[in-house]
Amino acid sequence: MIEDAINAITQMFSPPLRAILWKTIALALALIIVVSVVLERLIMLAVGAGGASVETTLGPAAHMPVAVLAWLLSIAAGLGIVVGSVMLMPAVTAVVGSFFADAIADEVEREHYPADPPGRALPLSLALWEGAKTALLAIAIYLCAAPLILFAGFGAVIFFLATAYILGREYFELAAMRFRPPAAAKALRRDNALQVYIGGLLIAAFVSIPLLNLATPLFAMALMVHVHKRLSGRKLFAQKN
Image (cartoon, rainbow, N blue to C red; front, side):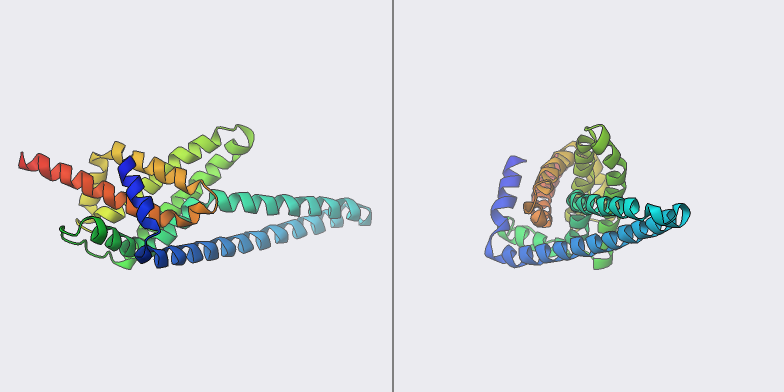
């Protein structure tokens, strides 16, 4: 697995993948900005509406305390959005990876497995569906883990372990579905759940590093192409014997 990770990191900055790297970074940043702006607008609307309601109830004397409270809440909301954008990177990379999974896999297979038959490109609708499911699950996990992160501390550990599972599952299945039907890809993942999860832990570690995590789709897809090739070779060897 360590060799697979080293191969993935080494190839990430090769000329063929460099153009894809910039595209993934640009799309990830665009998604983060859009989500942040929408959240900021919604929070400010909620704060403004709440402040107006309090002033109407308590009268003009409440204007100054309400204004100070609204200012403090807006600062807290801004900090929350910054932290939230980092914590939501697994969801962002899940969506971004859907667009570039085949291009990344093609380069890895061409470089490291030139003698093997190339994989078949996935329909974009299927790749996006897998990415969307993973993104929604990542958001749900974040919402569940956030209170534990704030008040109990071990929420970060739960979030990390859950992220490892969902990202490892998504990228392995995207790599596997290039060579087999979706049901068979999921069965192969279940049969090798521990190996896939260890790969997911490496992806979760990568996505937890600020700035570097913008390149997560390249690392994750390249890694899981290697993992899939290795596990497929092991299964083929077992069938022959």
